[in-house]
Image (cartoon, rainbow, N blue to C red):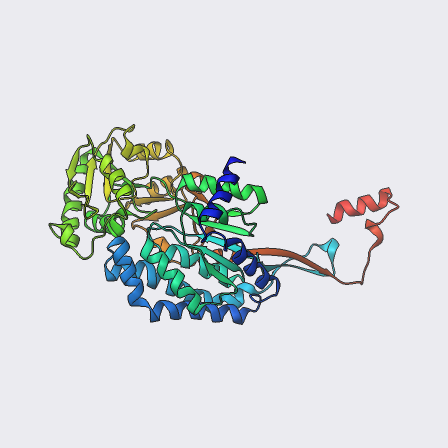
Length: 472
């Protein structure tokens, strides 16, 4: 009750909050009128979304630069191009995804047909994250539109330029009766969570995820949570060291390490640690120069709160490379820490920044013990030529996603579902999986009036029971 009173007080003090219930009800009305049901209408909205990304590309690039100092190529590939590719894939396959999905009908129900029919959930909510402020809002939006839902969109206020741009542009390109952007922070989100929508899709951290789950429980709202965790990376001695190092550096320091599937810590045999670190350093300097602060391709920390959190991780650690900080510019250089204590902050919390931990292990099998001693991660990486060890890792560990001999590339395959397990999330999306996440697969059985066998009807007898036992 105390929590509710606090929200009601906020509604009075903040006039921006007052229209939220009105806008959600407007979306519900549009859905009930059947606006989003037509498949070709959905495709037209997806085409409009693609048009927005193409026509306003310079504005999207500018916002990403202001929020995260993202370089043009990284911003286009990981945000704009990613969503355009997702739209193209969805438009190409949408008619097929919407078709009835037939299954066999058992003998006792013949003649008849059985199938599942995808139908939209209704009005859904997408709460985005700040680290990829366009991709992590628009990719689930693509799936929600494709499935025929109305959508209330809540970008992260932390990436303020990106959030404002979405609020400005989406009404210019999409149907405002079916899609609405809500700006704001905690107060606005609290009010949103009081709305009885049909699904909540959240990308972010564990603490907020728990709040969302509790709020959703009041209305029994289904929830998809895309979270994170400490994604391990095993580097076998039997690997291509040059390519392995390039791919680790690329996947770790993209977006200054602020990626939910970035490798968090490396598990490396003691005898191989020196060679690997030496090669990693060479690749860092090749990609970002001797002074990454001068590189247009190296990002910045999103805000001072996260900068200070990351700076604390360096205290008392064996920093073997980097560790240079500039609080005014929210800059933290690519940093490598060797063998921190397992109880240290950097090993207890998800790094979510440009700090890579290297943990020496006695042998590669020991890596599995370390991984299984921690919560299930969103991603697990393995670099090896040993196929037997590869299978051992796949069978003996649990994670949301696995990359063998590369980092994060599974994200680029729309045919692969993306999602977490355990504390790293629940539910998944991308491609057809995203369409299914925002759909209800309605079960349908259609039977003929012919051959209405009396076996199932009373009065029952031993003969009927014996026949039914054979049929079932």
